[in-house]
Amino acid sequence: MVCRTSLNSWQNLESHVKKIKTKHINELFAENNSRFDEFSLRLPEIFLDYSKNLITQESVKYLISLAKECDVDKKIAEMFSGQPINVTENRAVLHTALRNFSGTPVYVEGEDIMPPIKATLNKIETFVNDISAGVIKGYNGKAFKDVVAIGIGGSFLGPKIMSEALKPYRQKHINVHFVANVDGSHINDVLAKLDPETTLIITSSKTLTTQETLRNTETAKEWFLSKADVSDVQHNFVCVTTNIEAAKTFGIKEKNIFPMWDWVGGRYSVWSAIGLPLAIAIGFDNYREFLTGAFDMDEHFKEAPFEENMPIIMALLGIWYRNFHGAQSHLLLPYYHYLRGLPAYIQQLDMESNGKSVTLENKETNYDTGPIIWGSEGTNGQHSFHQLIHQSKTPIPVDFILPSKPHEEITNHHDMLVANCLGQSQALMEGQSEEQVTTAMITAKYSTEEIGQLPFHKVMKGNKPSNTIIMSKLTPKNLGGLIALYEHKVFVQGIIWQINSFDQWGVELGKALGSEVLTKILDSNSPLDMDSSTNGLIDMYRKRG
Ligand code: F6P
Image (tube, rainbow, N blue to C red; front, side, top):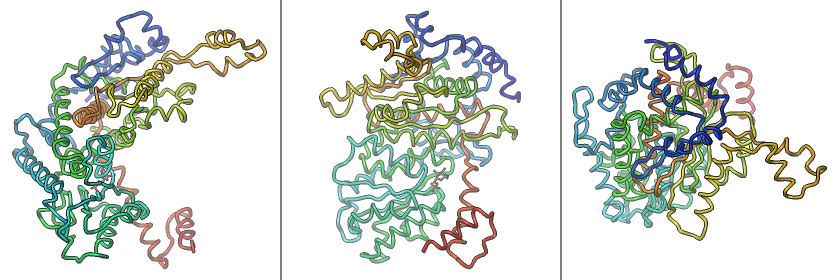
C-alpha cells in the first residue's frame, strides 16, 4: 500500500495549498457571489455551510480525490457489512447495527446480529416503560424516583451529555444522576440527596473491569446496604456489560443485566444498552427517535456521492487544515446551552479514535493525525478564549453548531444567540485591517494622539475558517443525526490517515501504573522503588497527616 503522502492527490494538495495560502477567504467571496450556495449541503433537518473555508472548487476536487485514492467507499462498505476493521482487536465495528431500522440482516462471523440487538432494544423498552409507570419497584415496593448511572468514558459521556442536550424531553417524575469520577466527592454529592428505597443504580461498563466504575458501584452498594438487605440488591441494581458472569457475581439478577457486544466501542456505545439511563431520562419513544436520527445519517453516509456527503466533506476539511495548514486543534462552538457538553463528547469520540501514530501497515505515520478537540458553549467563549482565536497566529478551524428554533421562546434571547454565532464566524473570516480600524477611530472622533499606535493592536487578520451546522431544532432525532455525523467524520479521517480508529491501546499504561502506585499508597511499608519523582510524591502523600 502506497504511503499516504506519496499519493497523487496528497501531492496535488501539497502544491495546491501553496497557491491557496496566497488567498484570503474574503477574496473567494468577492470572486464568487454564489459561494454560499456552492459550498453548503442540506439534509432534511441539518444544514452545513462550509463556504467560510479557505477552499476553492479545485481544493474540493483534490480532497475528494484523496478520499477516493484512500478507498473510503470500500472501507465504509466493510464497516457496515461487519468486516473486522478493528484489526488490532480482530473485531467488527458495528455501532451502526444498533440503529439499523432497514430490516436487513447484519452478519458477524456468519451470525445475523440483528435478532439479539432487537431483543435487547425490546428489553430496554419494556424496562424503561415499567420503571416509568412504577410497575418495576424498589425493594420496599416503592416506585423509583431517582436513577444513579455509574460509568466513565463512553459509558458515561453518551447518556449524560445526551440527557443534558435533551432536557426539554425529560420525564419529570424520574431524576437521572450520573457518576463517573473515582473522586469520592462525586458519588457522595449524588447519593447524599437520595433515598435507597426509591433509587435505582445502573452500573454501565463494557468490560466491568474499570477501576473507577467498580469502586463507585461498591460505594453505592455500601450506601444501599446502610438501609437495605443484601437480598434486596436484586431489586435496585442493574448492569449494562459484555461481562455477564461478573455482573452475576456482583449479585445482579439475570433480568437486570443488559448485554452489549465487543463490536461496539465504548465511545460509540450510546446506541447500545449503555443508553439505558438516557432512555429512562427521556422516555423510550424519544430514545428511539434518537436512534432513528442516527440511522438516517447512516443512510446518507452510505449513499450520498462524496461531493454531497456531509460526513465526508467535514472529514476532508479537517484533513485540509490538519495536514496542509498545520492546525493542531479543532474548536467546537455549540451556540446552545443544552449542547454545552458536546465538545467533551466529541473529545472522546475523536481523540480516543484518531489520537494514534501507527498505521495499519505497522509503520509510524509521517504526517499528523487526530487534532486536539476543544470548545464550550457560545456565547460564553466570546468572553474567555475568543481573543486568541481572533488575534493569535495559531490556525484553529471552528465548527459553529446551533438550532434555528429554540425550545424556549423568550424575547430576543435566541435572536441574540444566533446573531452572536453568525457574527463570530463572520469576524473570524473578515477580520479588520489597520486602515479600517483607523477610519473607524477617526469617525468616532478620536484624536491623532489617541489613535497613536492603537490600530496595530486592533488589527485582526481574519481568514480564519469555520463551518456552520444548523439544525432546525434540537430534537432527539436531530441530535442522533448530529452525533452520527461526527462519528462518520472521525471514521473517514481515520481511513485517510490509515490508522485504526477503533482500538485504544494508549489508555492501558496509565491504568496499569495507577494500579501499581495504588498498592504502594495502600501499603505504606511497600518499597518506594519507582522514579524519584513518583517515589517522592507517594512519600509526601503517605505523610499527608
Ligand atoms: O478510556 C478507555 C475506556 O475503555 C473507554 O474506551 C471506555 O469508554 C471507558 O474506558 C470505560 O470502559 P468500560 O465501559 O469498559 O468501563
